[in-house]
Length: 125
Image (cartoon, rainbow, N blue to C red):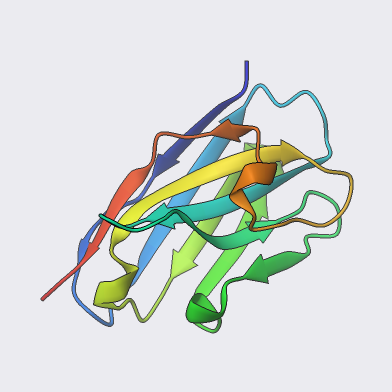
């Protein structure tokens, strides 16, 4: 059974940083992509970033480029989302998700098969 567990959320001031973690277990293939998504109150879920399990190719939504960095530690089956220069509009519940994919990744939520329960990120002074 695939399980994804997010951690690292919290309250931070504008301009601050957080690092989210997504610990995966039960993935029976070496070929999978991990995506980070977020959903703010009253808004649709948004793809933030993704990383594949092959060459480590990544993708980001325009609003976080240059501020967020996704990375993975295959030995720990964990994917990280380093978030710098946080803005109030980054406030949301952040979810990670996994899908089997031989190459590349996507930030389209409907491509993903397994989801974590989310971690809250609040950016406020």
